[in-house]
Length: 116
Length: 111
Image (cartoon, rainbow over all chains, first blue to last red; front, top):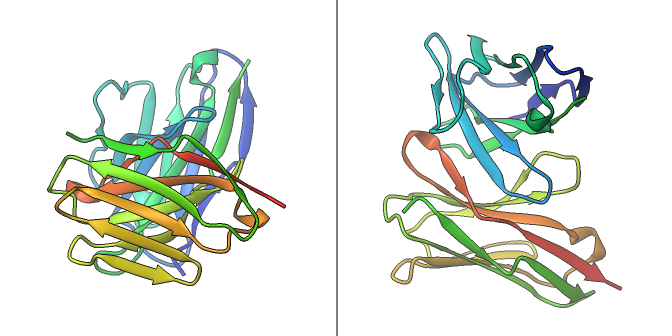
């Protein structure tokens, strides 16, 4: 149980375009989801907390106008990288707590974004 | 105060040996300490986790040792196998279910 699905698994886009990444909880509902960013051979850095029915909360230093988050339903959160630049190239990973009290975070398989 | 320090950065162990990865934290408000295993190009997968009121937890070949007074915890992988070769992250959970990750340990198990 507690499967988190992320789509696409990889995407290549041109500078200046926008890219949307989807994160779905497949067998449970998630009022909260988390978006992380990971550079090669580095740790995961929390970007923002996605809240169903309300605005996302962003970590310090993360541009909310660049990384748009929408938590449209109890099973879907999306991250849109707007006006992408090569420095936005990274591995983006979403996570959600399982559907039971005090459950651990389960992660999707990530999206490799390459901006050319 | 939100940092979680992890060591070593990389580790090479012979097949059948014990792999040990250590983590330390400062924030006493952390209430849950999971370990994640990550293979290249994949998201992290929960391996084992412990709460601060427990000193040790074992699941198969994986054991977490937790020292609350020292604010340290470690992962032991017994009988390490080549399939265990991956990057391991310790983490600590704070308010709002947010995880703070350690810097990661790249483990290689050699035949």
